[in-house]
Length: 106
Image 1 (spheres, rainbow, N blue to C red):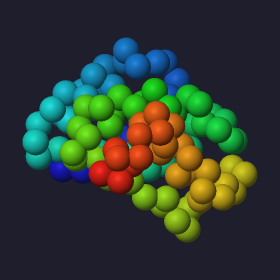
Image 2 (cartoon, rainbow, N blue to C red):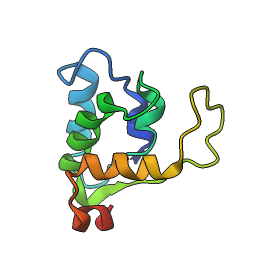
Image 3 (spheres, helix red, strand yellow):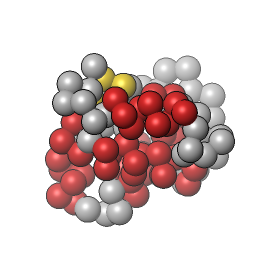
Image 4 (cartoon, one colour):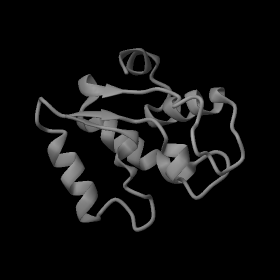
């Protein structure tokens, strides 16, 4: 099972919500994976997407060997400022605190 796009869990309400606990519990099972793409889509911000970072970090930490990522290009149904895909790569680096080894793994 792959939970795509950070599960579209919405970032309002914090990390203590039941949905976040459920996702993190599922990621403890070896047949569950997480796709950490689209944190920028669910963010309320147009750039930087600081509100997505704690979620991306937690999901990757829960299953670093079962995490995948992509830009989601060509960004269907995008309604915000169209980002440069390099901004999305930068967000991934923020999820892993700049750990290039972990970025390559993902």
